[in-house]
Length: 418
Ligand SMILES: Nc1nc2c(c(=O)[nH]1)N[C@H]1C(S)=C(S)[C@@H](COP(=O)(O)O)O[C@H]1N2
Ligand SMILES: [Mo]
Image (tube, rainbow, N blue to C red):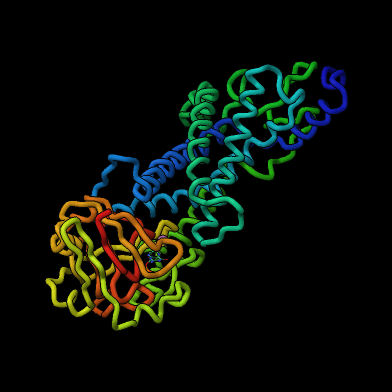
């Protein structure tokens, strides 16, 4: 037999591969899961780019400020879909991994490139999803910077995915439609030459050992897992991770939120906190009666006390805090519009540098023009009908529509035109 002539490794791998044969490992399974994966990765890529650039805009970029929940929606989708991709990716890998057991590992230059590209796609996807998941729990067990890595890997994934889809296009087209994939009784059609490569090499005896069939000719044991049960288990696992985590952003699912890192209404004034005043070491300075908000424009600069700010016209705004890590909560804010403060110092329509008196991460942010000029962007003094809790940024914090939580600077010190 050809398999024997190939020597030990080849026939051993063929045996491994035939032992892994399962009716569930059909190109149709790979296509059904694969197109969900592809769609999910594209959705995460789009929402991820939005999140990236709204935090780090390229010169000339401007962003919509409505709907006010825009970032809440895009980032909620990003994290929920990203979480759902984890069971989907594992199911896809389960379906196709016997393809690794092939000898020789590659047969042509094209094969080398394809394998290298698949290796990149799989590795990048696993790292991307693992780091994304860890990030939602604010867990950074790696030495590299999360955002830069997550961003770079996203491009690698999308590039490799495009090549992967192009290479597999004939298989994808062949098994895309259910009508062309099953017979009248609903059973999957067998895979013929060129219709999908979830099969080992043809053997000398002429038997094409599809992964659905034992190579050694032994009767196929009743499948431990049918294709239906694999798809059902994948769907169930995906639904389970979504239902038990999406409640940190979707109020309707909040009662089922047992796995997500945040509870929708858990925290002072009914809102979660990422960094408390104690952690930021600002408890003392936040309560200092000498606190002033400095507003510096091209014409003049003013120092406003809390009483000065309270004496100005107040605006009420219903705006969410939408953290990049995926949790978000709607809240009622009250305070002085930033545009009114800008007008005091001749800074109308200008981009502002927003500084906190807390040191460390997020101690300053750029408030782009479209946000600085929006009537709902506030120096907030109250939250949900009460004076701002010190953990929420007392004496004053920034709150603006359609922006990530990380840019909603707490414990304000100054707004300035740069
Ligand atoms: N000065 C300062 N502002 C900050 C932060 C911070 O650590 N320091 N955290 C930001 C992040 S990541 C989020 S999600 C929101 C959280 O707001 P909250 O703690 O009031 O819910 O505040 C933002 N503003
Ligand atoms: Mo955040």
